Each structure stands twice: as structure tokens, then as C-alpha cells.
Length: 361
Image (cartoon, rainbow, N blue to C red):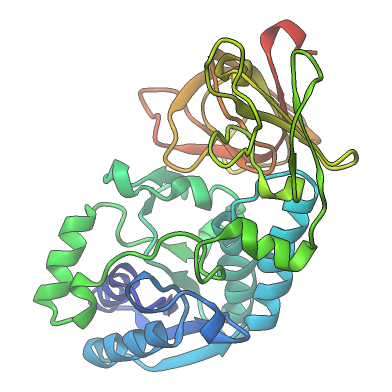
């Protein structure tokens, strides 16, 4: 069985490739060059998909003893991930670029090319599991679990995917890498968004979308409380950086409640106004059987909330058992099977909007 190991240059993908070799597969390593201009991406210890990472991946492949190649997917990444990121913020939504990268690059472009070249599967270092029935499940390491960002994969993509690390904690992976003599054993994990070098998302977006002054408005009174340079610089639930001229009458902090691109308005209010009880999703994808009841996760590493679920070909509606705050359109809504098998992914959808129980349709 020929498998392609996607090697990011980090410790997880290196150990995953080594385990695939140990399992007897014919393994080839590949690193994805995703930056049109690598100097504009994060570098060093906080990097992801940079020149340093490519070198680390090549050294790991040499130690493991497998062929290694670099695939240039920079244009595809820019169109499907970077441009999508900008467009989503311009539309008043908050995208998750890691979800989009998994969907469009690592398990679409890469898997499609691998299959065309005669490979049987793609191996990655994601912390997730596939059981004997091909179902996507959480990692045993809850703190590192990545099933949420993989829930956009189709059943066919999962059939040609391998996640060797799902039964091991991150600490265990690092210990194994050290035993194998892999130099990336102590390499820090990448953080933040790889294509925003300085971590200033608002400034990065301003360079691409330009200044677009608008008003910050109080939800209860309609009073204009301040001005902003672009509604794209805000996300639902945000508290800091609002630049409001005066405090609320009760002295409590205000939060972003909604973003309206058409009027370029940011609406703010108290924390309790963020609470929603019904969440709506579009473009649903099911890899498990849709259920009337499910455990719903609304952000990466977020809490899991029991919910009653209504699924159709057009959407997914989750009536949550308890309200949650700060649900942002554009994020993924992932449904897990209820206990005792609460680690099995049933499906996902992209959040379109959310409503409080009193106003839910």
C-alpha cells in the first residue's frame, strides 16, 4: 500500500510518517509550499509552511529514510484560503482558515493529486482517530484534539486518510520523536494565522480592504458610541479595542453583538446579549447518520453543548440545551454523537447566524 505523508516540518507529521513506515506501508514524504512570498509568513519557532519548515521536513524524511518532495500549492492556497479569509471578513463573518485549509488544500488538492499519482492514502499528523468503521473520532488527547477542524472532510476523503497519532498524547509524540532521533522533537507548535506575519489581523485586513469608516452603535438605544475604520476588524464577542467614547451607564463592559457590512455598522451591548440558544448552519456535511440529539461544538477547543438537531439537505439547526455566548457566523458547527460515544463526529456545517430563544424562528 502506497501512502503519501504530508510533512509540515513539525513533530506531529514527522512521527506520523515514521509510524506509517513501521506499519509496513510504502511511504513518500511531501511538504506543501503554500507561501507565494515566504518572507511574508510567520517564521522560526512560530512558523507554519515556511522555508524553515521545509528544511525541517526534509531532515525528518532523511532520518526516517523515505523519499521526499516539495509540492508548490501557493496559488491554490492563496485563492482557496487567503482570498476566502479576506472575503469572509468583508462579509461580516469570522472564518477559520485552518478548517478551510484542511478542506481545500490538505484533503482536496493534495489527496486528489496523490490518488492521481497512484497513492492509496494520505497520512497526516492531525490529532484525531479513524475507527474500524471509518468514523472520525476525537483524539485521546483532548487538549490537542483536531477532529473539529477535520469535520469538513467527506466520507470518501476519510476512506483515503490516515491519522496515526490519535491514540497518543502530544507529550508522548514528543518523547517518541526524541527516541527516533528526530530534530523536531522539541520544536514548538505553530500558532495564530500562518499568512499574517506579525499577528495583527486587523492591520493585515486594512491593507487589503482599505479604510472604511463607520459607526459603533448601542444595541439598546441606537445611540452612536464611536467610530471605526472598518467593520471587518471586529468579530462577535470582541470586548477589547472597541474605541468607544464613553462607558455604559451601568459601568459594565460592552461587547460586539453583530456586524452589518451593508451599513458598515458594528453593534455593541452587554455580555448577556451575546447569549444564543439556536444556531443555524449552512452547507451541511454528514459522515455519520444525522441524529435528533447531538453534542454541538461551535469553536475550536470550545465547550460541547447538548442540543436538539434538525437536519436537511440545505442546513442544520441546533436548539441548544443551554445558551452560549459569542457565536460567530463563518465558524464551523460540528455535531458529535451523544454519550456514551461522544467522541464520534456526525457532521458539520458553517454557521450562518444564531438567535436568542425568545426570537428564534
